[in-house]
Image: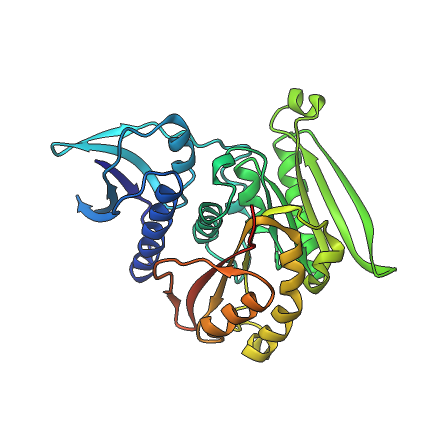
Length: 334
C-alpha cells in the first residue's frame, strides 16, 4: 500500500477542502496512469495521508505522481511501517517561482496546480505528460497558472486584459530570472486583431541551464495584454494542450461578478478557447457557486463544442464569500 502525506494548511476548514481536492486529483491521476483503485484517507500521528493499493509504481509513474500539488512525502506502508519513496519531481525552475509573487485575490497555488493535474489526467496527453506541453490561461491575472506550468517544464501562455497585471507579472519574472542568473531573452511586440492593434505581448525564452539555452532547448512564457474574447486571433489554432483558469469570483469587482456579466464574457470567449485547444485538450475552469451555477456554465461549454468530463464532487468551501467548484471540459478528438 502507498501512503501520501499531505501538506498541512493553517486554516482547518480550508484544509478539509484541500483534502477533498487532493483525493480527487490523486484518483484521476491513478486512473489515467492505468493504476486505478480506491483512494482512502488515513490519519496517522495527527496528519492526513491518502492511501491506495497498486502494483509497484514505475519511475515514470512516480515522476507524474511527484507533481501532485498537495503531496508532501510519499511512502510505502507495510505492516504499520512507513518507508519513504524518493520524489522524482522534475523542477525545471525553482519551486519558489509561483509562490513568491503575492497579491490580493491570488488563488492558492496548490489548488491551481491541482486543476492543471486534473486537466492533464482528463486529456489525451497524459501519455506524454513529461514532454513539453503548452498550458494556456485565457484569464491569466498575474500568471500563477503559467508559472506553475514552467515549474513542470511546460510552456505557458496567458491572456489578461488588465495592463497593470500583465506589467507586474512581466516585471516579476524579469527580476526572478535576473536574480537567479537564468539565461533568457525577453521581447515585446504588438499584436493585431482583425487588422487593428489588439494586444501587446511580452515573451520570455529561457532554459534551466546555459548549455541548454545555447543548444536551443528552451521554454517559452508569453504574457498577452488583450481581450480573451479574441483568443482565436491572438493565439494559433490548436496551439495549447491544456487550458486552466479561474473565472472572476465576484468578490472584489462587485457587479463584474454577476452571472449575466460572466456569462456574456464566457459565452463570447469559449468558441475561441475551443479553437486554441488541441483536439483531446481539456479546459479546467474554477468558479464561485455564489455567483454562478454549474449547469449554466456547462451549458455554455457544450454550446461551444466542449464535452463535460465526469468527475467526483469538486465543490468546496474557500471563505465566507467564496464556495468554489471546478468544471473540466474536453475538446473532442484525438
